[in-house]
Length: 189
Picture 1: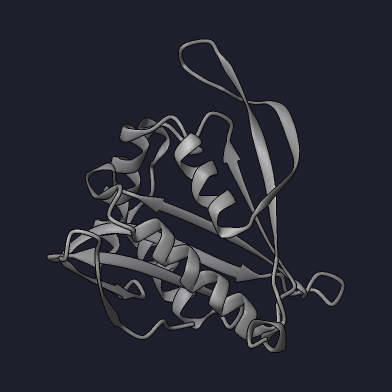
Picture 2 (picture 1 turned 120 degrees about the vertical axis):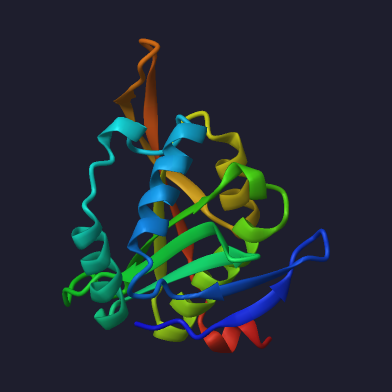
C-alpha cells in the first residue's frame, strides 16, 4: 500500500517527511540497511551479510507499494533517509487479526522523536485496519528499542534464548512483544 506523504516537526524543530519508498530509490535503501547494520549489534544482520542487488531492492519497493496487507513508511530529513518501518497484516483467516512491525532509525537521527512517530503511525494503521494484536521482536540488550516499545504499550511475552551469536562470542536472546490494539470506540471514550 502507498503511504501518502506527511510532514511533521522533530523535537529539534526540524521538518521531517514520512512517505512510502519510491521506485528508483533502491540504492538509498541498500545504503540504509548497510548503515544501520554497521551502527548497531541489534540489527539481524552484519553489514557483510547485506548482499542485496539493486534489482531485488527495486522489486522490494514495487511489491510493497502493491501489497494490500502492508505499508512501509520511511522518514526523510533534508532528503536523507533517516528511518524506515513496516507494518504487515497476516493474511490467513486464522491470523488476520494480527500484524507484525519492524522499525529502524539511523544513529545520527536518534532522540529526535522519529521512532515514536513511526510507532504511533503504525499503531494507528493497525487500529484503522481492525487488527487486534501487533507483534515485534528485538535483540536482547537493545534498551533504546525496549524503552520505546514499552512506552508505546507493548508487553514482553517470551524469549528465544541464544537466538543470536555475536562476533564477540556472546549470545543474545530474541525478545517477543505484543501490543493489544484498542478498538476505535474505546479510543474515543
